[in-house]
Length: 203
Ligand SMILES: *[C@@H]1O[C@H](CO)[C@@H](O)[C@H](O)[C@H]1NC(C)=O
Ligand SMILES: *[C@@H]1O[C@H](CO)[C@@H](O)[C@H](O)[C@H]1NC(C)=O
Ligand SMILES: *[C@@H]1O[C@H](CO)[C@@H](O)[C@H](O)[C@H]1NC(C)=O
Ligand SMILES: *[C@@H]1O[C@H](CO)[C@@H](O)[C@H](O)[C@H]1NC(C)=O
Ligand SMILES: *[C@@H]1O[C@H](CO)[C@@H](O)[C@H](O)[C@H]1NC(C)=O
Ligand SMILES: *[C@@H]1O[C@H](CO)[C@@H](O)[C@H](O)[C@H]1NC(C)=O
Image (cartoon, rainbow, N blue to C red; front, side, top):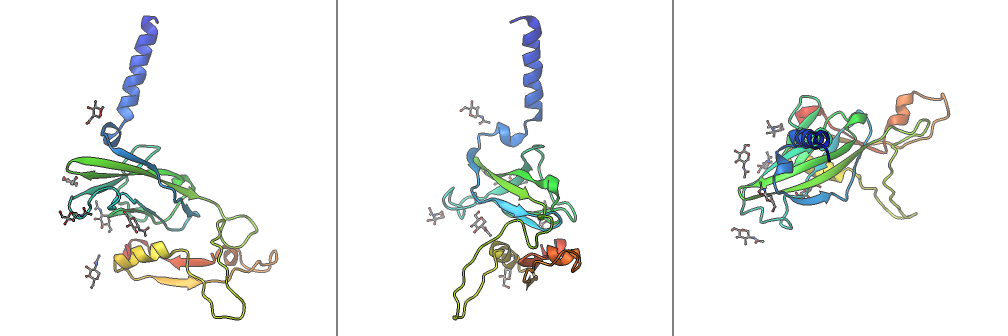
């Protein structure tokens, strides 16, 4: 080990610690990656919900807490940005998802005596060229000859908007595989269940 490599390691160490933000230096209990992934396509709304504020983690009614979101790539805190992101309670909203929003996001819950962290994965996918609907399907089976219903797979978004007392509209579309050139391309982009969420006005 020469002087040069010691200096190199030192600079490397300083460089690393320089980019570490508060949450990496705190001894947060790490709940690792949330099993549920969040899927979106560019231009739509995506909601990431931290599940740390739960009685499984600590007594949430007895202890005050804060939740902060960070981008795991840049380590930067995510704050409200008009038309882009809203941080509200335990939830991070992307109002107009872009392909480069794909990645992991870290929610850090802090109480006066401790902290907890959890990663949530957002997957942003392009619609499949020439295919109607969304890249991800929520399959549901209904029986012939009886009254049945399809439930909207966006129910978590709906319950969150209800908790905000937000107004929103929900529309159903039937996805039809159009023959090539038979209709406007936008027809093909209407999802099976596409809720129209107006930007920050809804949040
Ligand atoms: C985190 O834990 C380590 C090892 O237990 C300890 O040395 C360090 O002081 C702790 N840091 C903080 C900020 O509590
Ligand atoms: C969000 O996470 C909280 C726990 O922090 C949980 O109680 C709630 O049901 C979740 N909401 C949605 C819409 O997933
Ligand atoms: C949480 O704290 C409140 C107030 O101290 C207490 O009444 C309640 O029993 C606690 N709940 C649990 C599940 O420990
Ligand atoms: C919540 O955040 C505010 C502002 O950063 C801070 O003053 C407060 O102490 C935090 N509360 C907890 C419980 O960490
Ligand atoms: C961000 O916007 C949400 C929704 O409008 C609001 O509840 C929240 O307090 C805002 N956060 C900050 C830090 O301003
Ligand atoms: C939503 O409305 C109910 C009933 O009017 C009220 O109790 C609650 O505080 C409201 N919630 C929010 C987030 O405004």
